[in-house]
Image (cartoon, rainbow, N blue to C red; front, side, top):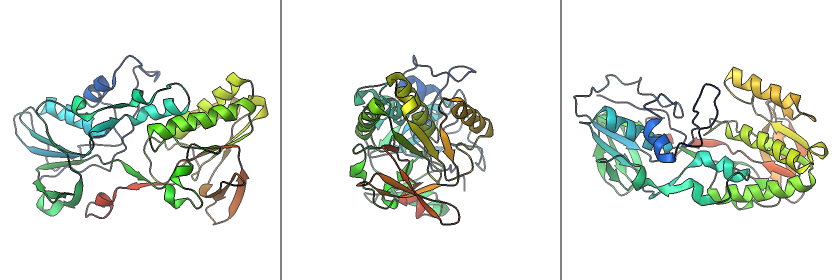
Length: 332
């Protein structure tokens, strides 16, 4: 059985154009999606090195890609060039492409229009790929097959899973997704619309300053850098408004780091400590509940102790989980 199975992928990735890591604003979404895999940009941990045997340029394998986010589109474009004889199929019911790396720019006021992150999947897919506008319902890896939500059975030689992650806002007691973008509550993750509403909340907060709570998920997550970006941008927006001295920014991490890569973690913490006033960091604190009426967030530590934190603005990063079709399959 030939089979290449990746981890469930985040649809968020960032791209850099030089050794200093500066963002290349001149690269379009299409150029990024078309070139990033070929130039070695890591896409959410996706790797084909786990294959029992990799196809060659001359072979014509049947490759199925599940998910047409940034990750799925990137691998589809790469494989279409590197394996011109391959039969490529991508599964995703969505006609619209949402460029999630841009959500932080909407949520921090850099971009003012949601159209900046919305495109058509049809424009971004490589020529000649078979696009099945359905979602995967069940994975049957022992027989190299999957079934779709419309009951279709699809076989493959190689399978790439790029399904993204499910956002678990419902696991935070007292929080409804409808609360996001109102009453000082924001989140960069759910949609362009909520990202824009998050900027409205941040913009109102920076006019007077106050106490801001920034959070991090205790699970694996898509774009683990986004909560850090939002924290940096909130600091800068307060500086611009002249209210930084009147504000307290506190970052709560359920881990003993704010980022899993040590050099990045140390760099971020060093920057935050250098600010005047510094950004406070609270380790091993997981957001478990929120009381909107009193603007109080509740955090739980590793021993199960809960503490209450008042806020004027809070950025919520929910727990994230594999989609059900992956979670409830032999792949898990």
